Length: 273
Image (cartoon, rainbow, N blue to C red; front, side, top):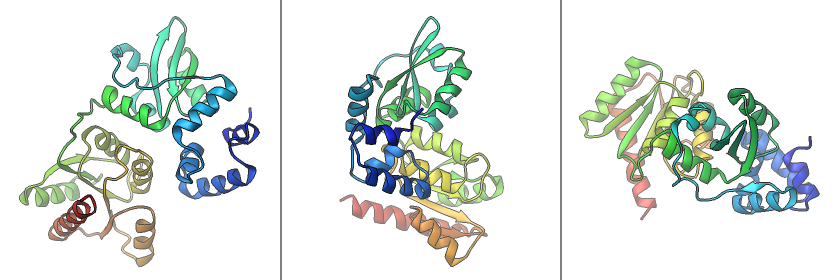
């Protein structure tokens, strides 16, 4: 089966040259092609969904976050899988399962969905923003107002405890996560003011977490500070170029963490005025 980019070229939605540039960016950014094209200003998410729907007769769905979904339907897909693959179960009817998805040509995800559920998968096109909103509300039980907390993502309990105690001492509420995937879930459900993450962790490391945050419209503006034992200028440059707001070398000095957090939050407040 042809890839999404080739189909978009055939449908004259984008040019071959645009596809080449997007694929080059995709190699370094490690994002979905649709997200890369959107960032390039070539096509919006809504335009992409509409174009694919017209060209290939896919069903589409909007504004489904406010609907009610039974727990047994949600249980068909693990929340980790839904977050990683950007899919959301909409309705089961006999042996068929309708699933909101951003890329219906992602055969790997479609096969995994079928294997997880034992059902025939009916793809329904939607945008990343709509699917992420549904995941946040129905899987992660996100509150609309969010939180006023600092999220610390660190697999070393002693280090996480030191950072938490320092921040709490200065009046901050602190949430903890042991790896990037758990951190992403908490970020989506709690909407923290700022995230501090280690660079090296199991399941999803700090760089994987920053990519996931920047690709998510609901939390992409959240400032993220990296903690790392690789205290080199090259590593600092890599971190800043990847989207981190600041870089703190280990071993952790509690007062330094507090000062950096305070500085980033003050800067964020100024830019939002």
